[in-house]
Length: 79
Image 1 (tube, rainbow, N blue to C red):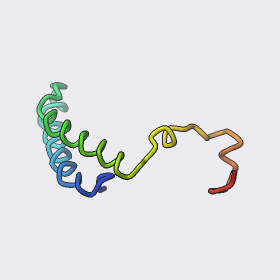
Image 2: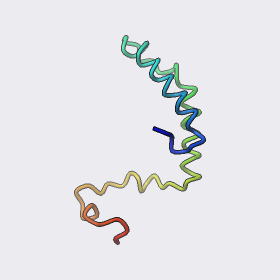
Image 3: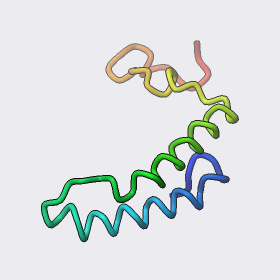
Image 4: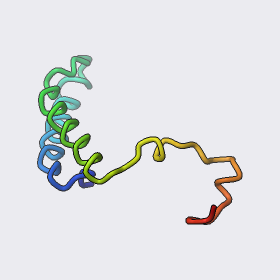
């Protein structure tokens, strides 16, 4: 899956690769120290935050709970 911002895809791939190595060689052997991938995660997180701003994505709207409410029954675009 690509990142929310296309300019973040390379950082995402680097982080995913690092995470997979960490998970297999560290975590599954009992070491839960996440510092191995922390630097690339920080860069990727900053990139995603910037992409969210540029795309004007409202995180409050994403987190809004509509399941089991009257709003869930509405069709898209319906007020």
